[in-house]
Image 1 (cartoon, one colour):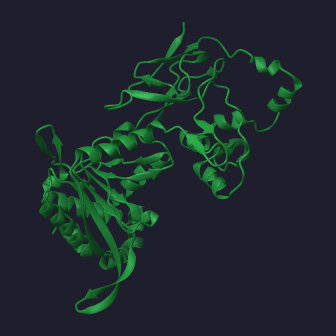
Image 2: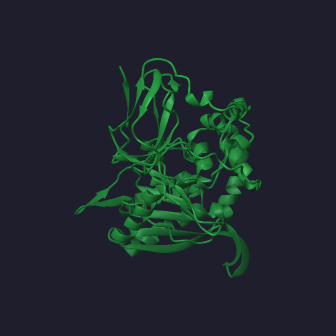
Image 3: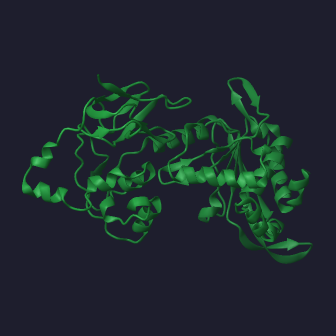
Length: 402
């Protein structure tokens, strides 16, 4: 009796996905829990695994097609793999099959994150040297290959009958279909502009004391907690104190109601090869500096490796985005709806400023708060940002909860 391959529950408020790639083809033998197909939602890419052992007997949905939860993607039949017709083809085909590294063999071992980069950049994985276990490709291998400027070998034409995602119009133009994640990002950004009365206020922080404290304790901090002491934990803690003082910034609008949150789930924007995601650090107010740093590293790593769960991306009461890691000096971040506030951090740069009537060179950072004016008044927004400035410029206040 055949076992159906079904689109699983995709997560909160997600009802549809796109078939990104079949990892197995008709006639392939599979074991229980073998990955069969990748689905791309507007938040994450996930794999559908085999619920029974057998042979792929039918594929009902092509790559590139949209599917709803519960859709039957294909079937697994009983028995072992039937010999492929291609193996009895011309001697030329036998020669290709006998090559030590064939494209299909190399592609079959790719993780979802690596596969995404390879496909998006039209790379041939068999031309890249893998440094992972058993010679598998890692994301670092692919990125290093791309940065090296090597000309990738042309990929073999896909055997699927699905419409191609890239239409070649010559060397001066390339048309690439937007991924579902990129489409969702575009929708949410436009939604924020259309629904919120969004304004941005700015301030600047003298990072001298914060940098000195970090330099003084970073080695002992890492030795004790096994994690590096960064600046994000200072800003997360400062934001939580400010949110407690100005609860409207931690609120949202639901119809005609204002919903005030008495918990602090902080979203941290992360740039990945497939787009911007905002995983959430749960109950950040209950975490120590070390817990915050470890949590952010974990979320960022899993985001870039394509291993985030749907639950990592839902909820959130306030967001922090750090454009400074890319060199941004100032920006106006866009709200992560339905949240009413987002803090933008920026590059630390030495600038001359007046200190007690004298010109000093200090490491300065511009910060920005974009907020929904329907909920937050200008006075609250400015005071909120000043609260963060005071806490970071005098970091001992964070430890004493002042």
